[in-house]
Image 1 (cartoon, rainbow, N blue to C red):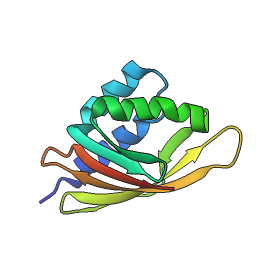
Image 2: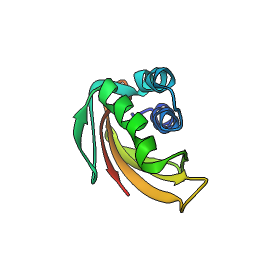
Image 3: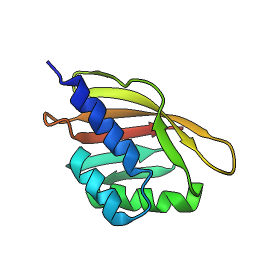
Length: 118
């Protein structure tokens, strides 16, 4: 049986990494939740692989979005080491951005794949 609370914590840790601005703080959170060969893609990003790549993406996203705060909108839905969660990026200027991520996990509840939609 899956440990839903641990998966939820993984998602919260991942989402909170997007709220950090310093690479060291981002890596501290990504190291907790991201599998070594975890991948990420969305409509603007070709597939990237690894902890350094996701940290680089988070840092570069400030150039696209500016300051913002990500939060999870509802309890993630998970089963069979995969799931989805809805999020909101709140920006001091401009409209908020709502999205949904499809996510897969390994047996240690680390993220192995995210496909983002927004």
